[in-house]
Image (spheres, rainbow, N blue to C red):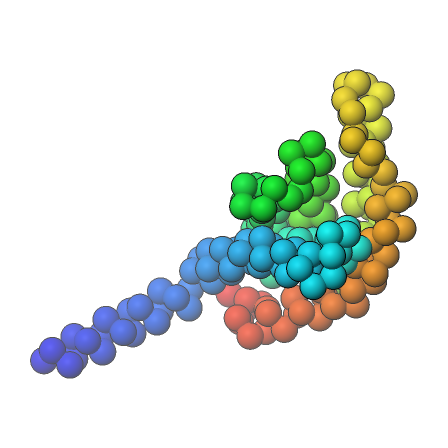
Length: 188
């Protein structure tokens, strides 16, 4: 009789973990951890400018938004940036709000565009439109609100981050497709 109860509990637990909500929560938490850890790995392996060059935190946010939607991408963006700052001091406090806004823009765009068009087109549109919107945020911060952007420039970030942008464009839609297939997210 105990064995039957144990089997029922295991099945119940398996059903809980296979639900869409559990996949969403666990996936968002894991991608938040990746969003914190991956930049550190890049900084250790490739130096202090590796984050700006390869945009590793962007990868976790974009994957979350593709796989689980804009809210998940936004949670990954916020938690990755805040916890990364608290644990490592990066991004700097001055850069933190700007980077948060930038990543939230990408999460929202992917979350919306992925439902409307091909993943690669959604990614390309997000890369372009996201930077245009981010430039608008910087313009408002500087000219209307009188805030300092601490040397942040969209054009410079595109030049420096071109390797990361190319990696995002080539890899993120494919990785998101694999995640969706493996986690059976398309049919949930």
